Image 1 (tube, one colour):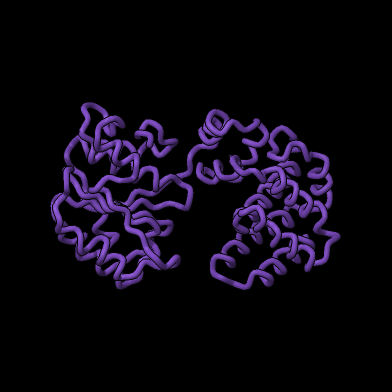
Image 2 (spheres, one colour; image 1 turned 135 degrees about the vertical axis):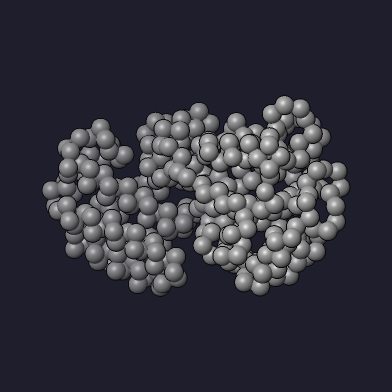
Length: 329
């Protein structure tokens, strides 16, 4: 497990956590708020490791007994709260793994750190149970709530925690990381960076995918032939993306990159600024067939489709509305 110096981006959050430790002003509860892949889990794990570090100098040292235990996932005073149901964290999960455990003093460390992934999945009852502990915690307890949607937490929890919002990592930092650590070619890195929109986890996921070229080919086939395809064929093609173990929302983000390229080229005629530079002829053809208003409608439609899918609107209906609109524009 790396130290804070290996975190890509999030400089302000890292400095805040390091200063809290140096000044002995560590809060009893933190919320790490950011979308999946934004780095909140890595930050929380390194912070927990640093809190328990027994080494001298910069923490975590990575070499002391405590750091080795944390790195191997068997530190007795760093507890990850797991849950059986995939879509909810119930009150019994919180009572059993956190509320009922906090009064037991740390085995060998200054703190007892509880990490709660997917905290937005806590039921109201679970949140009320954890609230009592956050309000009156033992001095040695630190609770780290990891969430993709902090607004789903009770206002009383938000008011008693330090909220750390994960911000997008600059594109140049994401690209440098991919080139140096994932060893992808320059062009592939550009597509992954545009897709990730500052989310390094998403960039790494796509860059590391064995199916990258197939995903790209499937997207380009759909984008260049949609106008001649029946809606039923389009829906089947989109559903087939699941074979690549890719979320449909992420696939729609790749389609959005294409239409941003079309919009950019229509405005500038500059092929060097395109993400899909190798498809400049097809993009040029699409710019001739589409108006600025039409392209903007498509980009807006892609965002609406993502929102509908997140709200569990029927998949086939959502895709039908989206691609009818794309065909029209």
